[in-house]
Length: 163
Image (cartoon, rainbow, N blue to C red; front, side, top):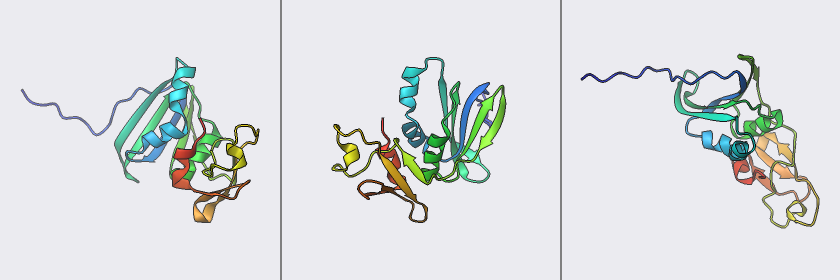
């Protein structure tokens, strides 16, 4: 019996409404999942589904990952945080089967989504109602805490995402 050859294209159902995150470096989709807290999404919205495609052939990247989220739109602020880690990602918002591209950009300020790495920072004190705030040092690919001046490299952002 001859083996069937698998074509270059992967078949994944189109989505009527939702988000497609494209141009993620290969084998890095778990980082996107962590930053967007997709595990929480599964508990909050039962009708949402997520498809993660890894190591897909890409003309511009060689290989890439893709994340498709059915029935959920990624917030642009979250997309911009992803841009810190993966500068080449693109976001496609799908509505009524039609996609509209959004090119995330590195934000100047990030509030509330990232924990300060300095344990003694006022934003980490349970009794203080202070929202974490970071200024972006784009040239250095670092974030700087507004309150304690601690630095956080863009690549370390996934480990400091607030749940």
